[in-house]
Image (tube, rainbow, N blue to C red; front, top):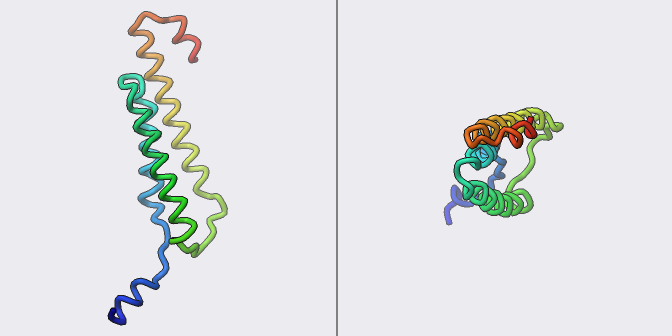
Length: 110
């Protein structure tokens, strides 16, 4: 192994929040909103989170090094995105139930 390869292997890796957070919140959004039309989509999202969770746990324990502490500042952004996804899911579900003439069930979601 060359000196450059040894330096590259010993370099510390940090998580790429700019890719991880939008991907996972998009999967939450799609898994919830389109669950009305396709009941297999939430199962696919669950498999995605099971696999991703296992990989992320391994990476956080053994691969990544922490360069800074954000103090939980990203929590507000993520929670707002998830609440928006749940709100969109409820709107789509109410509309779908109205199309099925299930007004009583749709009114219970409000």
